[in-house]
Length: 144
Image 1 (cartoon, rainbow, N blue to C red):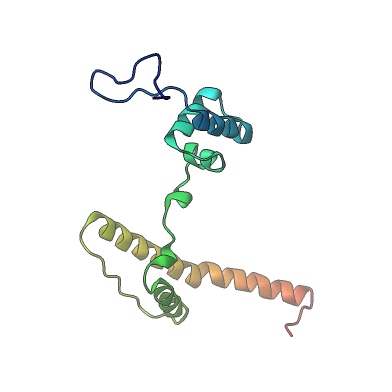
Image 2 (cartoon, rainbow, N blue to C red; image 1 turned 120 degrees about the vertical axis):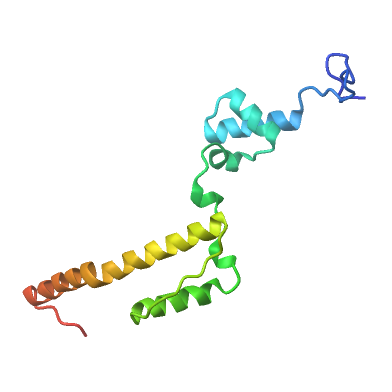
């Protein structure tokens, strides 16, 4: 057997002992070169199977990278379009959510989001439009 390490083939628990692996060492070198990590960090990442181009995201994950694409949920685009139409038409929107943790949280977030949008449309959007109209009048801009 080629992969015997320090003359010991198996541990006392029967697990196979393996020594340095050339493929893992090469992967660690690539991680060092591409990401400027220490040798120890690169070796750990290489042994975990992390590729050099994924090492930064693995060591510094962001929530955005970890979240699934919401548009992959069945009919998500249709639902988003309908909510957008309701907001633009100033319709009331009913929010249904289940009672588990993610359902209650998402229902509360949708409620807050709707309240914020309603407030923006009622107050801030009117202020912004007034400012735009003043600028148009000031600079004599016309819409074509």
